[in-house]
Amino acid sequence: MVQLIDTSVIIELERRGMTVNELARVAPDQPVALASITASELLVGVHRANTRVQKTRRSLFVEKILEVVPVFPFDLAAARIHAKLGAFLMTKGKRIGAHDLIIAATALANNCSVLTGNAREFNRVPDLDVVVPGW
Image 1 (cartoon, rainbow, N blue to C red):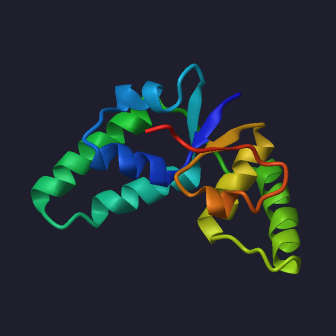
Image 2: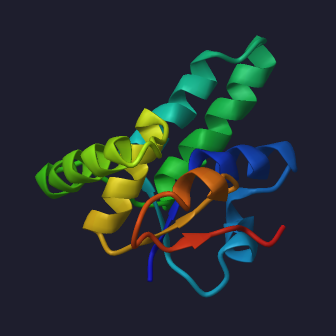
């Protein structure tokens, strides 16, 4: 099963000074992908870097990830799941962040699990397989 990587995992990978190649240690024997909103979140991080050196380093890191990890779009199938899931979670008083809801919907639309450091949020989503990296 493809593991859709949440932004929290990529941020932790960078903080630990790990390379993109070390994703295999985090998600052994599993193909990985990103949701398009995760790609956007990573690119926002590049633009928000505090220094030119940090921006250059982060940009190289993010662009390498985007080069080697497939990105799944937020398409109509995901939008339908997003709407139904969002309404359900609101009704139950279990809302999750807007971007996390898009990631969850993208994962469900593509039969993926979510690899995240934020299991508490994603565990609110019914039928979503949530995986926490074994750092």
